[in-house]
Amino acid sequence: MFGEKFKRKFALTDQGVRNARLGAYWTVAANLTSFAGIGFLFLFVKQLMDAMTTGAELPGVLPYVLGLLAYFALSFLVHRMQYQNTYGTVYEEVGTLRKGLAERMRKLPLPFFMGRDLADLSETIMSDVKTLEHVWSHVLGYLYGSYIFTAVVAVVLLTYDWRLAIAALWSVPVAFALLFGSRKMTVKSQAEAKAAALGVSEDVQETLDNVREIRAINQEERYLSGLFAAMDKAEASQTMVELGNGIVINAASVIMRLGIATTIMVGANLIVAGQIDFMVFFAFLLCVSRIYSPFDQSLALIAEVFFSEVSAKRLQAIYDEPTAGGAESFSPKGHDIVFDNVGFSYDGAPVLRGASFVAREGEVTALVGPSGSGKTTCSRLAARLWDADSGSVRVGGVDVSTVDPEVLLGDYAMVFQDVILFDDTVMGNIRLGRRDATDEEVLAAAKAANCDEFVRDLPQGYDTMIGENGSRLSGGERQRISIARALLKDAPILLMDEATASLDVESETQVQEALSRLLVGKTVLVIAHRMRTIENADKVVVLEDGRVAEEGRPSDLLQQGSGLFRHMTELQTLSAGWSI
Ligand SMILES: Nc1ncnc2c1ncn2[C@@H]1O[C@H](COP(=O)(O)OP(=O)(O)OP(=O)(O)O)[C@@H](O)[C@H]1O
Image (cartoon, rainbow, N blue to C red):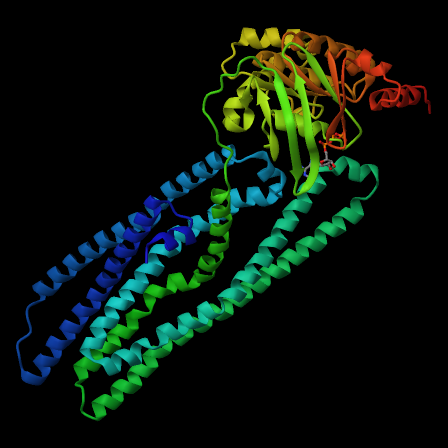
């Protein structure tokens, strides 16, 4: 009952399974204790009846009072243990699960995140864990404890009188058959309601993210009506779920209690036929008044158990996803990056088809080529954000796919056009480059990246909060903060998107100055779009259709009359002369 299947079904750890088993056992003990109360009542009535029919003497009040006190003390202890073993241990398990999930996410390769809806992923982390937490604390122990308890009571009742036992217990499997029969429908309607709710959060997120653009194109009304329609759909879907669950659960509860009626009917018949005496009948009546109660709580939440299986599956899917592992140490001989006959495709669509080139240490290597030719892909493969399908990418002779990505990335700094900043202070954002950097080191990096002047003009200088993704800064200022971060990291390899493409002349000059300090002595791989960037490169690698079409010094390539590089350069020179 509490084996591997149970563990996967409810996404538990080994400790979680042990806790659930203990919770179930203490639930059995608690139910048996409640039953013992009925036993006392039965014994009391029996003695009373004996006194009335045979004139036997009743014991004094004291044994009853002592018995009752002992019963209450035992009941308190057992219920406390049940509480501790069902609720108390769950919060530990939830903590373990959340930490495990975060740890797992850290190790998952980038394609896992790219291929997924991030709203759906955060739903898994937040809401699925919450669903499971509720099931673990409110249902698991009670439900499985009730199964075991009913089995124990059934054996006792069957040995006592099998006819009355069947009359009392037939309704339990029938009620559960109804519940499990409706399971598919319950899970389906819950899944639909969840998808509708997720749709609403995605729409809200999109509206908030794009509020500026929506206003600019005057589409507030259209967007809001779409959002309201999605909300109405989610509400209707949730109402249907509640209604459906309510009907099935109440029907199951009523069916279960039909056992009381059949016990009375069968018992009355057996008494009339003289086959049992009244006290046996009375004992069964007491039993049926209590036997269904343990299921009440679990019945009300059984839909959650069914649906928690969907949550557990989503969590298991994350755990089953292969992580990008590798060696925990990285000792390359120098930092030349070698692409050796690299093949790569996204979801079966080939992007690189045997690309080979070398980006040497101490040089700036510019990747150029038409849009979609695979420049960004090369830079992703260089940092093992993805693994090559064929061929190899080596750094200082070491195949990057053999090194743990976290260890590998210690040797890389990245400066991209879409700078990612956090809602933290300027100081905190730069320090992301190297967590243990002193304030002086952060300031030195900021100065070298031409940040110091604008940062000192901010209200709290380096302690100014810069807003979500640096929303309070200009494009050039954000860019320079990311350069300061890279300077602070001082990694031997620098991957760059052409970082200055969207800046005005003054900002561009300042960023270029900052970059020139950053590039010294590093292996620099830059995705270039404009001639200005390429002019200063030591080497240009021209990609076309996933292969290296040309490579060499920019001036040499320009000499080649029919080359792609020369053609692209001419086009760009032509477009530079256009005006509006
Ligand atoms: N995450 C992804 N999933 C699926 N396809 C992708 C993904 N990223 C890029 N592609 C596809 O791979 C091809 C190469 O993309 P890549 O971004 O490497 O080209 P690029 O040369 O950098 O283009 P650009 O100059 O326009 O930025 C394109 O056809 C693109 O649509």
